[in-house]
Each structure stands twice: as C-alpha cells, then as structure tokens.
Length: 254
Image 1 (cartoon, rainbow, N blue to C red):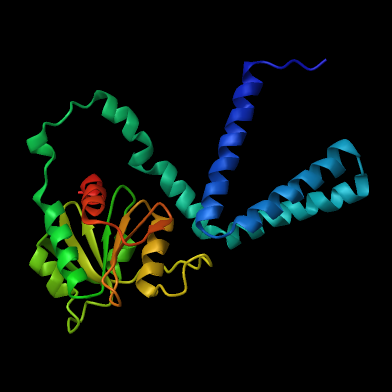
Image 2: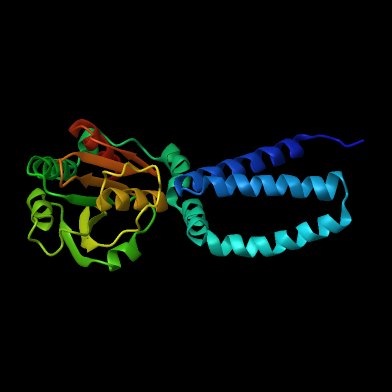
C-alpha cells in the first residue's frame, strides 16, 4: 500500500506552484490556449501510458514528448528567458532583506524626482504631447538602453518635456530611467501582441504593455491623441490614471 507523507504534500504544492507560475507567464504573453493544449496533451499521455498501458500508442506519445520539449524551448524562448530572469531577480529575495533592514524615516523616503516625473507627465498631458517613460526596477534593461541614445542625466521635468517635444529627434522612442537618472532616450521596446488591447490604442501603449510583460519595469504612457496618462505594470495596462495614483506607482520605483 502506498504511503502518503509530508514529502508528497510538499511535492504536490511545488508542482501546483510551478503550474500556476507557468499559467501566469502564458497568460501575460497571450499564449494561454497553448498552455491549455499542453495540459490536455500531458493528461492524455499519462492516461495512455500509465492507466491504460497502451504500449504502441504510448511509445508514439513518448517520442512526441521528447521532440516536443525542444520545440517548446524554441517556440517560447522569450517566455523561458523571462521566467529565469524573474527567479534570479532581487525582487523575489526582497522580502527576506526587508525583514532585517531598518525602516527609513520619512525624510529619507521622499524623493523630489518622483514629482518631477509627475509634473512632466501632467504638462505633456495638458499639451497632448505623446510620451513613453520606462522606470527600471530589478530586471536589467541594458539591451533596451543600447537601442537608444545614452544620456545619463539628472531627472528634470523640463528635460523630459524637451525630449518628447514633437520636433525632438528622440520623441518617438522610449525614455529609460535607471537608478534615479535618465539613462537613455529614443529606445526601442518589444511590442505586445495581446489581442485584448483596445484597437484605438496606439504603438506606445502596445510597447508599454510589451516591456511590462517581459520585465518588472513600470511603463508610463501619455497619449498624443487625448492626453490621457496610462500605466503598464506586470503585464496589465491601466488607462486614464489620476496624478495621485501615478505618483504612488512611481514612488515604488524611484
């Protein structure tokens, strides 16, 4: 008779957590139907091989699985890369470090750069100037920075507005903010192919959602059509956010 102990419970919990994480990853990348298809295939494979013991059909399924693993690696190389980047990021270990880190007082937590970004977005919103600002968190955006013009400048409300001014050569690309400085501008971002994005949204919104799906960065979009400010984070796009919400989100990253 099979024994069911604490190790089996831990094993089931780990598998459930892994499946849930893969589910979230597939959902963010718009490949949820593929995830369901893989689960159905695995269930059928286990029924054929383990339950009904069909040797011929089971051997065919075994060959398909061995080849299918390589095909999945090639097909979902970006998602797999993001999976390991997330595991290796400091975000997952931040909870343990915060347990031993002393709390900062209010004066230390306040950062004038937050309001400078908010003010710049507010002015660009009033003037209907399109903008795309990316704030790096724990996952490095070095490859994205290399696609634009390196600046390494102090955060300034006026500088942000000048970069996204319609006649500026860098206004079409994205601005990258890293370590409380404007690292680069005119950067090229991966575009999301999520079919649920409203058709009236342009390339800036799709690029913002794309970088939020592939990293833990915060993406801020100012619409050129109506001046609305939107935020993309963790693969989710929030449209027409208020200044107070924008400020609170930026404060977590700066």
